[in-house]
Length: 234
Image (cartoon, rainbow, N blue to C red; front, side):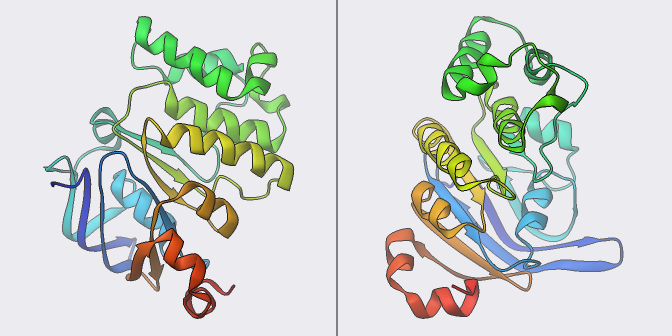
């Protein structure tokens, strides 16, 4: 079966520096896959490469068989890739309602239905619907960041470090929401929190020093303490 997202021997760079040296992975439609690795391994750079925010020097990068290499970020998004960046990517001076509306490709019935579903997924956002984003807590800002990516019908959702800096109780709420999201949307998640990664993901890839070094099922990874220690420092 043809993968939904395919990366093969990706080499990408920022300025004069090559960050990814050889990253390969395949994500099938309907899967929830986690990218793991130590800080600085190249995980975020890979997501940005997919989105066209980092230059690809070499390799194959495809969505549904169509190349992403050389395309502009807005065109990649329109192909059906939602992106939740590490730094939230929300508009502080706009309300939650305005943040969601500006993220919508169109305001038709199905999109409004998805917005309502997102607000049910994150009740805090429904309660604070008319408040400016700058008044939200860190956890609520992360919820809004995910919500903005969910209002459109994407083929795949890329999520970068959603638990970073959040309290355990908020991470638990976020985990439940991401598990629910993964039932209807293909998810590629970069995450340092091993428990959250295991709760959401079915399969994993480990990136180390800009290279894909291991992959398999989350169930096998949970049992492999040696692999966890070697690449994840657990």
